[in-house]
Length: 241
Image 1: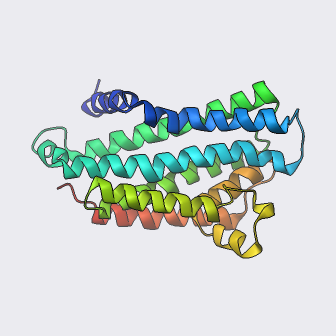
Image 2: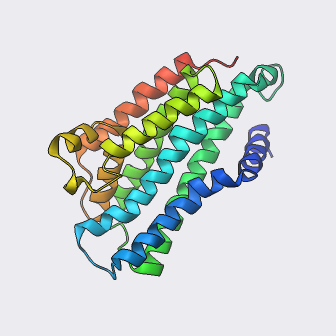
């Protein structure tokens, strides 16, 4: 196994030793689908509101992972001097970053698979009908939110500050992104603001693809822009010590 692969496996073991992280990333989205499956009893319904529950669960888990867990972990590593010490070994800090992103993306995929399968097999939520659109929305949603999370980790001087910024962005994203309640029930100006947030654009793209239509170009463009701008800013500003 390569050095990066070994490091990724080690980081994954450390992640799984924290039950709270596993619960937030995978168990919480699945639990949300179960709860709303029992309440809504979709039974294969094509009502557009039924696309809200599984996509909300996905968006919530992804936002927790990207905006809370990832930046806090990386900022904590820098604060404790772990990245500085590793810079003198073959396991340089860039490999730590690669390992963290690989784990985060893998966990996001695992959560998505569990949400789709549990929702469909357990409660007959419909499957995403536009597969290409769903994959594009999910992939761009991951890259956009992780880029924002890395930017938080880059500018935060400590793990505590990273947590504070991440939590603030997390709850703001839930409000403006149509996660707390369906976009249909939000004032138009909030929906419009959400169109230009990474979580809002991801949520609307996932819902569109779930109902069988290609996500709006605006939403995909917004996700791509966050990926590029926040990703480049994070790479430029990230400090290893």
